[in-house]
Image 1 (cartoon, rainbow, N blue to C red):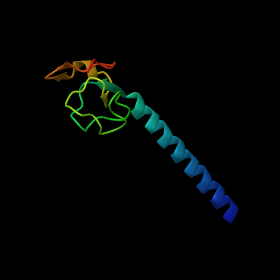
Image 2 (tube, one colour):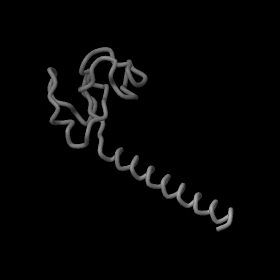
Image 3 (cartoon, rainbow, N blue to C red):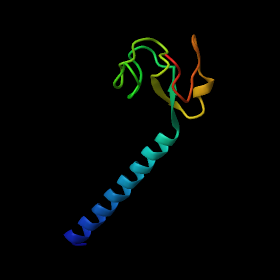
Length: 92
């Protein structure tokens, strides 16, 4: 085999692995959902709403407009001292 052939094979393998990793990331994203009202203070994920700017900025436990990514299908079954999780923001 020539150096050009080795390079072509290496490039093909790199592309195959990169494509597989991208699909795995897409699958992981599809298997989660934003769940409002379940994050502890300072433990929310990004874009929590009024009074917060991004991850870790919620001020109180179970803040209704802050969200956390959870496994798909589990949000509304998650019970907190303030009720169940919600797929939409709750009133603060």
